[in-house]
Amino acid sequence: MFEKINSLLVFIDDLVWGIPLIVAILTVGIFLTIRLKGLQISKLGLALKYMVKNEDSGHGEVTSFAALCTALSATIGTGNIVGVATAIVAGGPGALFWMWVAALFGMATKYAEGVLAVHYRTVEENGHVLGGPFYYIEKGMGSKWKWLAKLFAFFGTMVGLFGIGTFTQVNGITSAVNNFFDPLNTWTVNLFGMDYSWTVVIAGAIVALCTGLVIIGGIKRIANVAQIIVPFMAVLYVLLGLTVLIANVTKIPEALGLIITSAFGAKAVAGGALGAMIVAMQKGIARGIFSNEAGLGSAPIAAAAAQTNEPVRQGLVSMTGTFLDTIIVCSITGLTIVISGSWNIGLNGVAVSSNAFSSALPFGGSLVPFILMVCLVFFAFTTILGWDYYSERCVEYLSKGSKKAVKVYRWLYILAVCIGPYMTVSAVWTIADIFNGLMAIPNIIALLALSGVVVKLTKDYFNRIK
Image 1 (cartoon, rainbow, N blue to C red):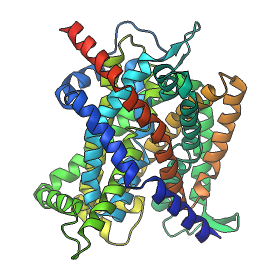
Image 2: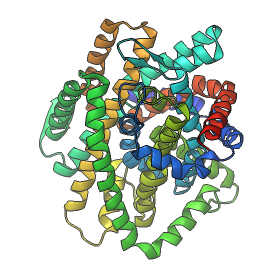
Image 3: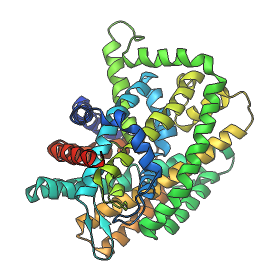
Image 4: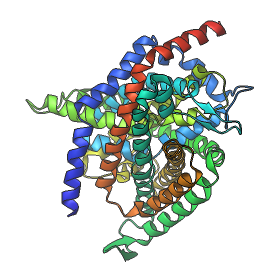
């Protein structure tokens, strides 16, 4: 039964994440890069400056930095640790190269999303803000496209409930805790006809409880938690990764060479180069988008809540999220995995990353796996919080502001977190991939249709600040 379900999910996943969607997402990023004249490169320094400097005044619910942290809380998660490992195991080291490509053009995409989110958002009299693709589709493209806005909101709800927000994150948390505290499954309990380690059960219950305590407080409580956890854990993880790269600096050129050759199938057997390249591209781009969410339309939901009067300024801040998430954090994970060779020894999931860091560092013992476990747990937990906010706003749009509908959804979300640890890993990631792809389709249509608005607002802003 489970094998048939998994086979069906894989078939749907391959259909959704086929070459057409990959080409479409890359094309949108390339198109926006050309129209914006490589803004993601030329204005990166300014964007990083704006990232740490909030506006003195502006309408919104949270500061610009808090909005970025909320967006990062949803992106810096298991995708950076487990997702990168999954992509490299399935697509080879070349998958990391295609993650970089997706991120480079994805920065232009993320910029455009942030600009449109603030430009078309609604601010109520009580200060409540609602914005995102559903509003820039409806307001920017016209009421006749409202069906597309509703389609995006529906897929956004499903991604949060069954994809990125719940199953993958809590599954990653419990797997990491189990691998550290009870790798041999010595202490087990039978649930749903299967044996699970007590560490999985206990960790899952704690995550569900903490999730409920935070999300009931809404965007401000989520943002407050994200502002504390995200910067601290990101810095800790980057420091750990830099230690690995410094300790293995002589192996970096060889690793980069392997990544590039693998990306284009150069090491595949005769006749299999194109197939190897397509697999590396598919896995790399899919995991890259899963990690940084450029093109999905999720981050602009958080960007819309920022206290700002300048759509372009917030677009630049949003753009830094993709840079930090993929170019920095995912690269550290990917290089460590390639340098250590742990991608090709029969391991899966978090075990790949754990083995990579442990074997690549000069000091062994249980300290490194413990630090990695802590990072993954907190990254994944903040992703759960961030995606609850995203999907709640989608529910709010679909229900025309019904508070009852949002409350019911919150409890369903907590329930999904509760059952997440007991989902099979392969099914979890496949479901997430499917909804990711479906969610991206309405958003990239809107980005193409409204690219002229983004270009006009960008020109006006930079002419003013000159």
